[in-house]
Image (cartoon, rainbow, N blue to C red; front, side, top):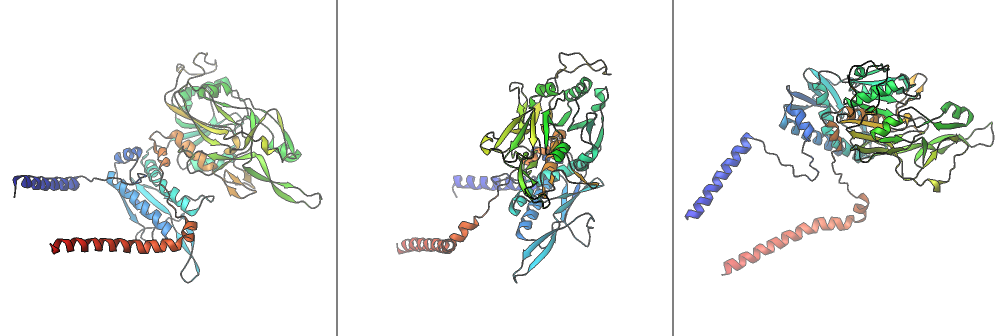
Length: 541
């Protein structure tokens, strides 16, 4: 053997040995997928690296499943395996002989047609139990949006797997439950009309209610303040407390109306005057980077209402008529707050206007109207008899109704005196630390109806029977505001959905079948012919 060949062989052996040692002592993983499906986000890695106790996951999605649910199960197992590479996270499939099925788990009945033509119902449990440090939580793995197809819901479920498990582990690690508060004292929505979102937020926070005092320090223990549809003006003392709470790093969810009206008068009389609503906080919001216009939004994309179109008063004939004052708002797919959230319903919304482009505040539209909207200035009158407006006048597009603000905000009391009745020795902070706010310009978004003493889901339309995404939007908004670890950003993970074009496949099925059968045979024939030619030339010589 030549010296050069010997050196190359020796280097190859050394390289193989070194590679073997590296693989033995350190797991090397390379994500070659185009959507980086197997790459955990930085917040997840940081969360897992701080785990002090092991995490046990019981996957109830087991048994004989169809192809769609097998894909979800496979993706879940792969995600948990990725977690296990970084931290002591172990999972096992549900075994009815060893594991106990929680009583509150309700299966999803999957209707499938068998080979003999009969339809069978298969119960599926798309859940997982996450246990750590003597505590556990059961999470749902399946997104169930009725407006989307099964494949789209499945894809969203796979996209949210990392966030679902990271949020569950984060909640189990917390020793103290964070607190949020609904502010009272300005004729905000009563507890019964925010009961649904309060119950949903109760899964993550301790939810309190109460009026503000004269000491801004009383607000500091709360991660988020929720101001739900106030109808009475804020005093200077209240504004000072809210402002200084924000300057200290507090977060606020403003759910406001830009106009005042009477729904009861509208229902009884068929019309109601609409006037600007002065809450005495326009200067605050303008300083923070947004303005709630004292106007109404109408949209072609809206909810219907039943209207009696009968000419005979004794024989009513109710027909659905578009109610342009109840727009169905589009959700931004670029924000973790609204990504994969279905349309949000509202009524009597006002347009929002981001202001102060040079203030360094990052502004992101979360909810907006459709491509056919118009603005009704106030004072105005809403009349149920005027249900056929000129659609050609709906010339506005994507009017903002919810905006997220993030950055360092300036205080409106930076060059003003502290109100006399404020009882605090803390100096006035003229600028905030990095913090966040969300402003929503329709109080109806957070309001749930109460029917015969029963709380209806927020975003539920009784007439059409449809459930909209109000609850998901509000819960995500509060989670976004309270999130210091960046976990909510995991909801932006995208998994590309590669669906088969069934129409084209059916139309070209013959050519596809021929191609899939003949092309491999032709390739094999060419290879065989090439081998025969090479061998003949070689041995003929």
